[in-house]
Image 1 (cartoon, rainbow, N blue to C red):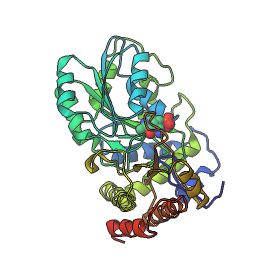
Image 2: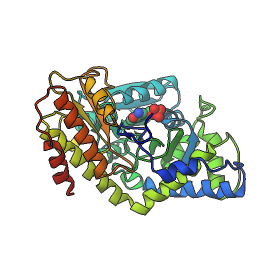
Image 3: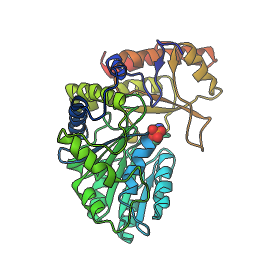
Length: 387
Ligand code: PMP
């Protein structure tokens, strides 16, 4: 790997050097007072990043899929009904996890590039006593973002707990967990949280914790049982040592640095910066005459852009762009897998990264025989970003 390459895939991303340096600090005992204080600070900071000051934070070694399991396995008991809203491939994962917990799963599958119809969601929630409704804030396979605020409010109105996958959104797209009444908001470290892969993060609401405490059956997963982790997280927050499973000490060091950077920027400023980068990249895509997967601008994520290849061009574009030092991602959604590519623009990415990426795409498209005027995309991006 070329160490100067620009990793513009929708996670993992190019990380900040200070975050990477924190990974190489000599590993301390996970029960030393210094580490306990640091972990406690991380959990306090997480509540600010999730905008859930009274929430219950969890940081557990594992990937985003574990965060999804930590979210569902603790709230679902055999026979419970779960409504899964699907805007791409990641909703299916929620359905699979819920079924393994013995839940009866219903799905609302949005047409490709669209969000579920709100009236349909409301009618479904009213039709049966759902224990949990899940949504994917940003589905990384389509670049579609749902209206978390509206969906969480609907779930609450109908007595369901909302579990929202923020893996490709948290700390990039706005989510005011407490104000919006989201019961579980979950993510992984490697995207807008901006820490190398390996940590599952989630915050549960008081309502979710109460529902967990009212369970009649044992959680079917040992490692994902909140009953094991809750006392540990509570202990760290009181700056006291506790042990269930060894924390990923060096990743927690890195998370401490990243969360401090995120909070120094401020959440509103950070959401706006992601919007600006996204506006810049999407303006360039339009100026180059390319179409996006999300059907409408209002439902397009600001953390990534999913773009259809123009006629006559395919995955060789990614190879050419990689030769220019910029790494992009191919398609993921099975219906259109070979027809589109994905570009992540989150975390520490800045306007210069957008311009370098757009420039590499323009040059590569031209080299592949697509009629694009060099500089059109770069100019559109600069105008949209106001640089
Ligand atoms: N949900 C979404 C929206 C994702 O993008 C991903 C990973 N790309 C996951 C869940 C699963 O996360 P992980 O690969 O870290 O298990």
